[in-house]
Length: 240
Image (cartoon, rainbow, N blue to C red):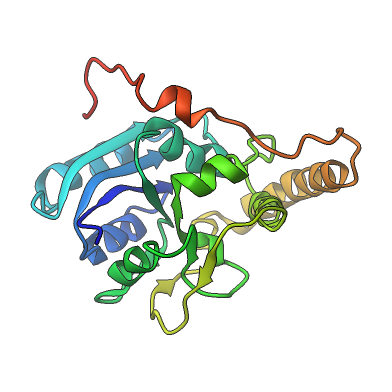
């Protein structure tokens, strides 16, 4: 039986309220909460740090790793950040910042990971907003494709890749987690959002199509050597 979540990872762009609601809804013990901030707003980072320092229950969440990225890592690289930063973790929970757990729902995901390699919170088209994944699955599938920047089609790409191999997946129903779909983009003005859609969705769709049509060759993975890295972590200061 799993006692704690080794790494719970999330990323945020501009919504302090979403992030607080997510963290406040956590009711299962975590060793490391890993937060990627994709914003150039230093005040946003300081607000998050102050909240984590003063209001997070350290008996429930032992350590907090806040990574500040003013240039925006993008969605795939943000997810990969958690996996690559803690290659020795046996499994991970990855959640968007606009998820709110109902009592016991996070524990249900963890419990299900005892028998499956990947556990999704539901069968919706946003199932990758929250999932649990073992290191065993990451070794077989590889990481998210960081060429898909900043987002869109990273989940479609990963879904195709995991369907090519034999791993045990589970879709949970009745979990009652709340997901504010497009919770990040809701905080972007309509003009900015229109420009974003025009610039990125077209280019990521083109990349996705070319990749799966074989125009980039046969290499479909985004590789990372967990076996090599897991015992070679060296940091002067691991946590803020």
